[in-house]
Length: 287
Image 1 (spheres, rainbow, N blue to C red):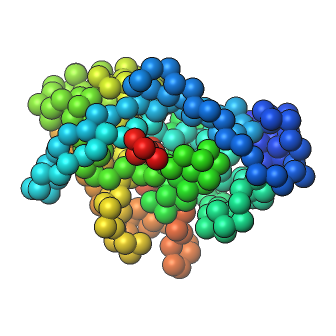
Image 2: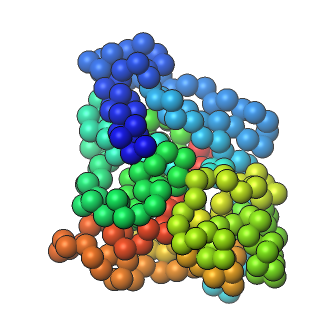
């Protein structure tokens, strides 16, 4: 499966038979962005140009939510229905030339290093349909920049307030759920067999969002966060107990997440010992 993923991404990188606009790999003319396919006023489908990769976005109505004891207003925004999967992340990871991007955009985007081989020890790592795992916040943010440049629409990671607001709208108060009910919507320690599962294998929440709780814990970025601020993931993961899978569940990055990484400084792309970390993208309503 990993090999087929690589071949898919390689074809994408070469602009080969997957190309939808007929331009060859030597073309440098700025691409035109495809129109979004709106399935309803509450959803649309985004396509990554010159690939077969698509993903659905769900409208999240605005409102207010309390984070760290402070009530925050959240404007209406779009959230990906699924966590970013390997077929999308590998398309970015192997897009070495980025020749269809403007120079200024390409210069601002970095590509991940190789993951040192630790992925072979992580079930679901690099496999189609699975969420991209063990990625750092920096890697997730660079992916969002690349995706924005590719599609012409501004994607980013959710803020804690956006993430929690969407979770509360979609799930209500899961902190009060029984472990059986949590298991109906989330992969956690009680039903996951200590490994990640393919995206959308369990039913979505009321908004139509899959796996926001459990499976891969998701990166969030406060608006004022600096590069040196510790990253956080929310929602619990397939390794979390039932009591740690809810809309306020959060984990801050620790040195243990990269304990076996032989590099100094540690990789800015991969969390060698945190295979439970993933991410999803959001987009402002008017961006």
